[in-house]
Image 1 (cartoon, one colour):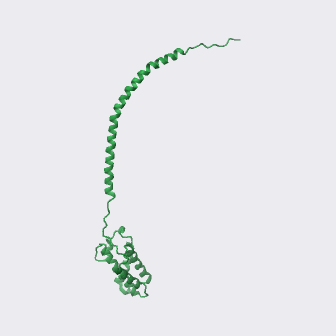
Image 2: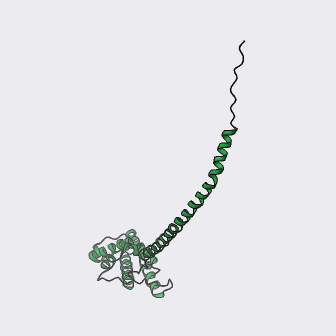
Image 3: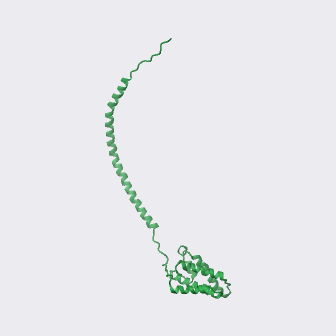
Length: 197
């Protein structure tokens, strides 16, 4: 039987004592270096921070100027092309004229229907003139109306076409009651948009 293998005894005490001594000697020098480095960092960071603070303030001020210019460009007060005239719904003259149109369109006589369309045409002409649209005819006045200013512009044009056929063709224009009522309904929509009836 062979004797058991014995490992040599290594004493690590001196090794760790040497590391500890080195650390104790190094620590004060390390602290002194950190203190020196902290002073340098503080010395650098103060002017750098002041520089960036100035840059931030400048950028904020420039952004305010840009926002003000945007406000001037996009929030302009819209000045209407005409002064909107709103007649009260109780306007006696308008009510009388409109009732005459309704009375004529409600009969069975095609001549009364023609008269209703012509009377409504005259009312529309008066309204357009009061709104400031210029022109020798209603057609010229309607051409000057921007679509955004007049939601019922197409209704006005359709009714105007029927009136023109009556004016140009006279009694030879065959007008049925459905077409006549449709034209009056177009005028009615326009008058209601601007609170004339």
